Length: 193
Image (cartoon, rainbow, N blue to C red; front, side):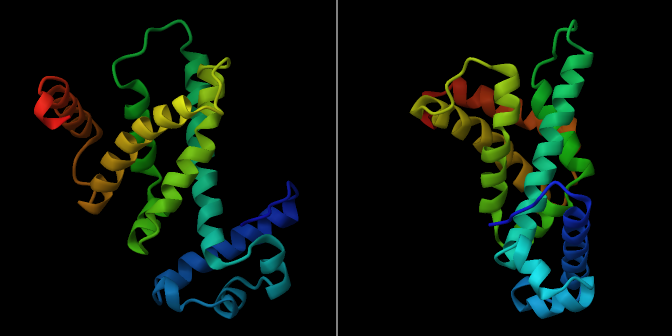
């Protein structure tokens, strides 16, 4: 678990810790990195580390949450600017993929160290930002909402993780075409459902 306060000193310390961790990941595997390594690399004391984080994975979890929060908030800003325009098909998914195309570092680390579940948890935690904006009356404490999010996040994360694992060679438009073809096969063929 991470505990971040809204003050500059706290954020500066967390940034130093994250940058230290990123630097260390170029030197050794994640599982071999210690708090002492972070302390030496980031110049942040052990007590400061434990004031904000319980363990190293929390540093990555926090930064994954930060990126998802940025993604959803920037998409909402875009919607506010284009409130009078009709949205094209797969508008959010295209934005989602383009965002991660430019900001995939944290996801690549989590995939590399086999902690994909953090990506899923961050998406689930932070998607409430967009849900509350688009569907302010939706009850997010229901089983229906959980299934709604499972379908949406499963598709988004599945294509995103596969794209990263394959070296990010396909363009956003190619990914959307693959997705549309996949939906067409599923919707037009009972065998696959």
